[in-house]
Image (cartoon, rainbow, N blue to C red; front, side, top):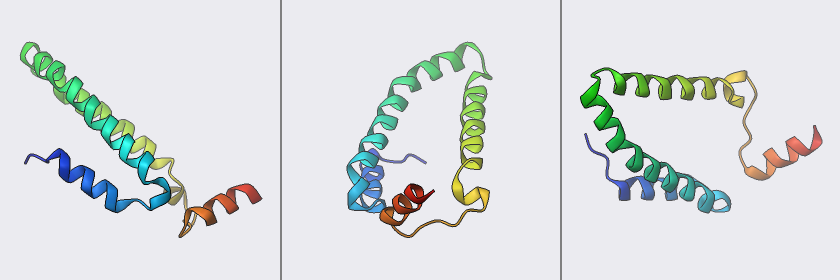
Length: 93
């Protein structure tokens, strides 16, 4: 299943609130560009060694899993409804 780049951008724009929308959109764009840069190298490495792409994908998935374990909602902390509440909570600590 191929995901089109324009659909990812539209989803990102609708997902984030206005205050952080520009930053989120630029981060998604950077991720798409980096994926486009590294995909030909991954295909070339796969042709030489049949397991290399599985190793790369496994490492990326493992790193994302470790990152998710550090998120506040995984550590049992309640999430705020707005960015203002979160900033106020962090400044009061």
